[in-house]
Length: 107
Image 1: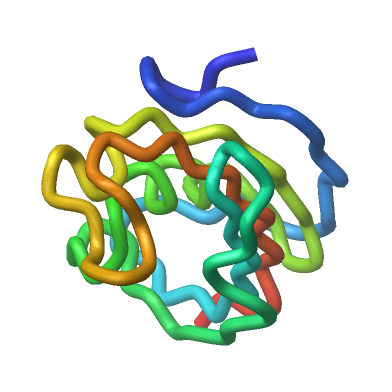
Image 2: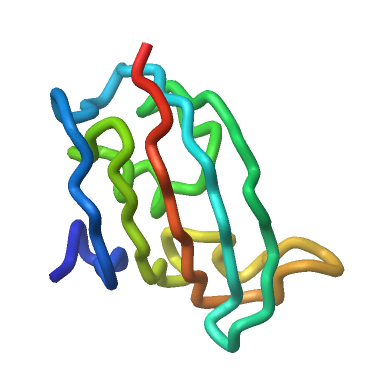
């Protein structure tokens, strides 16, 4: 199932409560891998206002519609990740990313 073109849902545990929507401030835990399996982010906790572009678009799209304690594992195409720039020393250009996202709280 695609959440949006370029974000493919791989696994989901639904969670409880109201769905997260654009404008909400959410506290999330992120684990990320390159498509080949190399870990790039581990148990990173961050507060994000959806729509603020604080994180890559693929993560924002994946969070929208989630619920507290919900978990989604998604595959993110390069155009919704770090595009042809990558992140020096960490993420190569045009990388496909895998992210596991858990919503810890909605404020």
